[in-house]
Image (cartoon, rainbow, N blue to C red; front, side, top):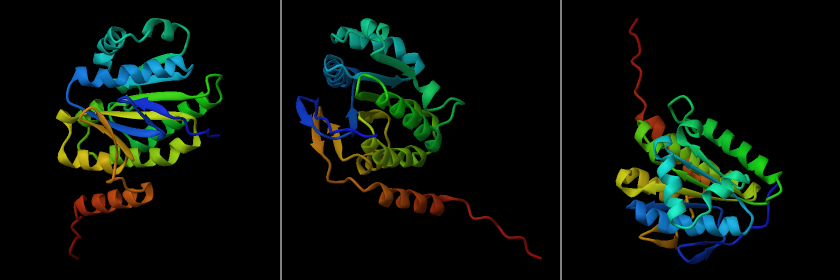
Length: 218
């Protein structure tokens, strides 16, 4: 599996990277970036998969239509899919890194065997941030995606509303993406940390934060 690294355009800039983080402050800013990304992929014959909260699915489709994305025709011919976060990130109402990793791997493997040759995925992290007690599970997943993406023909764009992010989430998101969109511009990220190093950091943080069990006195 795997494919030749493909150059895509984000914020008007070319980027040859498969896993990118996007911070936005408003719906308008988000779709000024997303819609050209989707349009470029559709015009190139790629498959598009986008994941949003179930409550926002209709609005998400409308924002794409308003931006000139041929949503209905692309869904009808199988080139685009819109899935709900609740059906993917958390099928039982909770997010689990290993489960989501397995689901993404299945999606990417299926796409690599298809006729379109490349898959563009955008995933809104909002549902995860609102339903999790902490961000370690999400960031462990993000780090592992850096190991998965190079084995498949794909571009993965992680969407974060900066208004919903704690300082730790922002720092960890920067550590797990080599390129980041911030302020409507694409940046190469100097804060990126290699996946294994970051996973060790998360494991140590979890160990430190876990409650110490009291030992019974005999």
